[in-house]
Length: 65
Image 1 (spheres, rainbow, N blue to C red):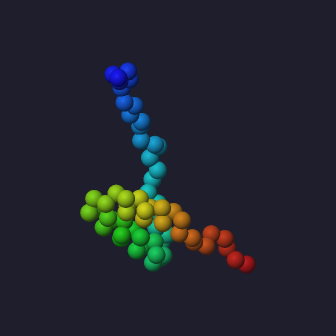
Image 2 (image 1 turned 45 degrees about the vertical axis):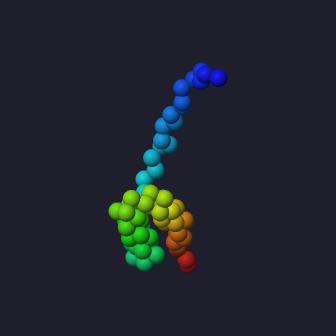
Image 3 (image 1 turned 135 degrees about the horizontal axis):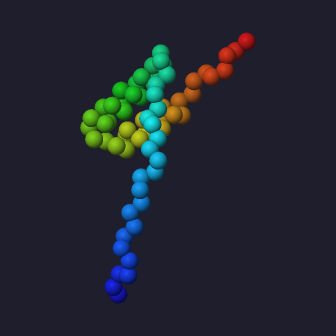
């Protein structure tokens, strides 16, 4: 049966800026180093994984009295 329509090409979703490390946090710094190494190796999956980890990494946001 002949194809009646052409493939649909969806645009990339709105780009989200990469998360930035919190100054002085060793975990954030390690994740950024791993992300940059993965980017240099062309490993986009690991770059995305490290960005997710950076976004989810907890930091104290409330000031304790």
